[in-house]
Image 1 (cartoon, rainbow, N blue to C red):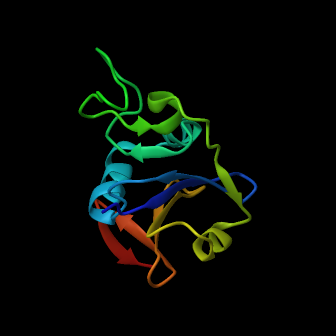
Image 2 (spheres, rainbow, N blue to C red):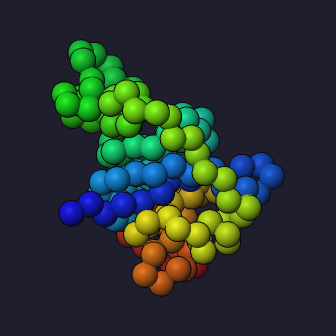
Length: 139
């Protein structure tokens, strides 16, 4: 069973652009990968530009060999548009982090803030928290 999530970025105007991620959305997996491998704005923007993703991995692009939905490289993110040829599902825009936290973001919602910090929203309690190496820390 999938643990779905949304991965987003807080834009300069305070809105949040986010994309769907189908697999492994829990903080100890996606949260940990985001903190460890997506810690700068440019990298997060590149991830969001992929559109909806199947599974998050350490890298955005393949470094060698063939990468596809059916034959993915081990540490490369799998995107529905790029790797499966589906229509691009562009980022959804929410008015603010608070609006994002109250929206339909699956089981978990992640947002990279203007302060370059990752926040997570737990779908069962609708609260925003900091994440540090996959461990939630209440705000």
